Image 1 (tube, rainbow, N blue to C red):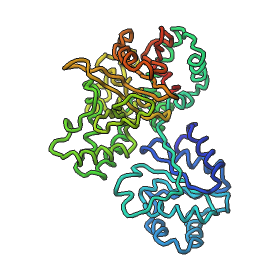
Image 2: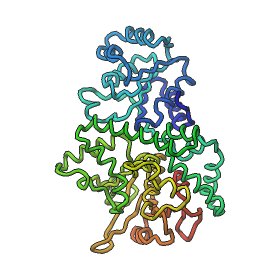
Image 3: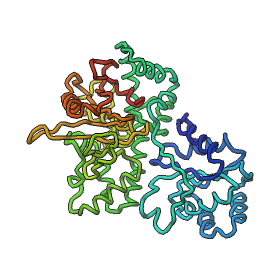
Image 4: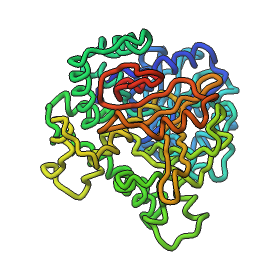
Length: 444
């Protein structure tokens, strides 16, 4: 039985149920093993009189074939009740289509099932938009979507039994009060544990059970192998897996963007684009795109030919970085726990920053421009807030120098709202710059 952790998405699902009253289905999409099925089944148990969960990874061909012919919905509902030994109640029951991408016809049937109106429908899935999972079917318009991520930092603290830290951090941020250094040291220690364990429910469960990072690493390796298996199902050449596996090394070079041609050779731009789209659709990564116009409409200047790619879960990133080595050789565990992370491993913090911003609903954009013939300035992340933009520079080591941020704010002074240096030091204001510990980034 999977551990049921408190998840913020529960309240979003509840809002959908209360507001829609059966007028649409809900699709929850996200990477494998982030807890979609667990939270949806928990929701069904609490909020409905009864439910049926159809796991299309396990469902028989007979169950899947029910959705080939929708002329007799009464028969479909009676058969499902018999097969799953559950009684459905009009407007008091929900049918869950788990891993619905494995049965595209069931997803297409949502249009008619919703129109029938007897029951609610929740779909979960990964690789939802992959071509082979949508070919030949009509995507229902009667489908609301929610994107789900690994446990964010606040959810991780809840899992650790801590409900007090994040409200206090929010108080510091809202009031602007400086944070005592001893608190920052404790909070950074707690954050480093999150970086090592990550937000995958199985990894967190293992840590709570064994308190062994070696055992946690073994769980994460199983999840990564599952991802590589999924990638091979999409692309038998293994090139998507190579792109995914290259993320740590690409970030470590500090080249300012991801170069797919450095990983996979001999493919034309169209084929490379297809592979990148499939990787993005897997929800295992967070993509950041360059914007040509750092203004409030960041997406209007989106340049999809220039990107950065981050691993969707930083805990998985730690394991992926030393994928070919034994746990004992993974220096990240010891270095992070002892707060002695070398400067050349600072990209781990950048990956965490991307994860935190993305899990809070932000799309990721960065901006670079020429400093001279050989060097560029770069703003790691840009947030659009009201009529202003908020630049973010991530620093894992020296934080007092932030030249790119200074030049950017001078260059676009009329557009700037708040400006942040994200670092491992205590929260404070210095002039117009806000020094923000990375564990507070999720609050923006």
